[in-house]
Amino acid sequence: MKTLTRTPATRTEFDNPPVSAHRAARIAGVSYVLIYTLAIFANFMVVEAMVVSDDAAATVANITESIGVFRIGLIAFLVVFLLDVIVSWALHMVFRQVDRDVSLVTAWFRLTYTVFLGAGLVYFFEVLQMLGSADFVAALGAEQVNAQVMMSLNSFETTWLIGLAAFGLHLVLLGSLVGRSGWVPRAMSWLLIAAGVAYVVDTAARGLLSDYESYASLFLAIVAVPSLIGEGWLGLWLLRTKRFSV
Image 1 (cartoon, rainbow, N blue to C red):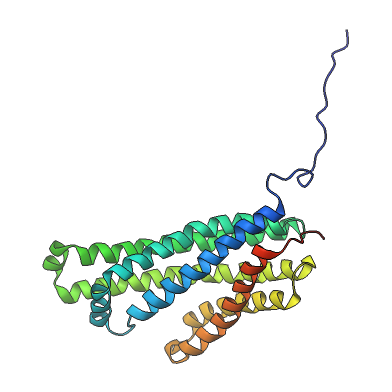
Image 2 (cartoon, one colour; image 1 turned 135 degrees about the vertical axis):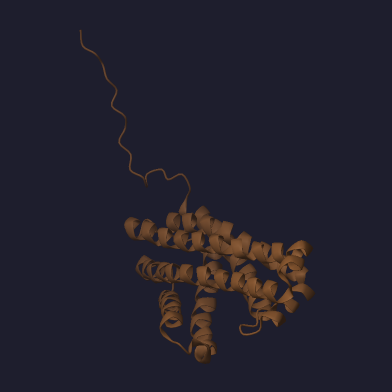
């Protein structure tokens, strides 16, 4: 007696994807706009505005006087950390039909950056704990607390900085996918690649140049201009476009 077996229908990953490229683009676009806004606030209105690189006492005074803003900045970074996981997945869903393997590696690099950002936020929480504990201040004294706060902030910046090198490689690969897709203006591709290279160069320069602070403003401009324009443009494009076929 023959045993009848049922052979399951063969189906590729793209025959019936769990989420359409169009829907993933909307998710990525909304997340990107939120990240764009929150990161600008947290970086420029909190870190850049409050931290004085060579003056621990002034830094602690700035944070203490605007502790509410500092807490909001921490929450903004925390939301960015969570949204970056969503963006990594959503961008892969959008661009995997261009090159599945490259799209996957692109997502991995963004997730690597995200892990470093999350690890860096531990130091932000440490600052709040140190400044919010009267016993800690009484035990160590104001000068020692100031030094500890500055060390935590420097550790946050260093951890985040290492992650930004991975983020730079993410942007380079994403820019290549954008350029190959045929859906997106090629200028966006070059802006993303330029921003990615700038992130990597900036991270390397901080390690190689003993007088990096002398060029800090220049490097900030080199990174910020293509990044703000390219990523902002990408976020808006993801929200508005309906073309996702190669």
